[in-house]
Length: 212
Ligand SMILES: [Ca+2]
Ligand SMILES: [Ca+2]
Image (tube, protein in one colour):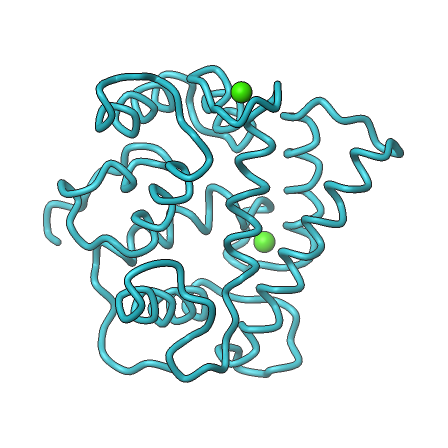
């Protein structure tokens, strides 16, 4: 576990991500239930019916993400056998991720001390991309992006504005490829300057607390 304080902008983004994507039941605690609901939401966005092969495949991938997160997060839990994660533990988890990413200048495989594996997070980014990319051509359009964000509870207009920001960096081509999406997501998890990277808006445009 790392010492030192978490950068306030990173803390803001990790909290936003916690409530938007992971804590779907909105009780400030991340548990298995949240992932069950996340599965339902993702299946709805993708238009998958329960009991189909595609649905079962999605279920397996979501289960894998949950298992990967829980395995590493035991180092941050008050009681390592507990199967949930509160927001304080969540922030500690990502603080170490950011440090590891800084050190390797990319997606880290593990924390610096080697105790925590992060491969599940790359699987999750891939999964999110696959959910958005409804026609499977490896490109995410504005409609694709807005559909997913709406499924997660973000306003359509706000999602559309965020899409403008994250695609503006590439001459408004308005198309997002898999590798670009992954780069933007990593920037969201690691970048400390609100103005310096479009990836900061990958989960919507965040309002900064003027005190920070
Ligand atoms: Ca929850
Ligand atoms: Ca597509």
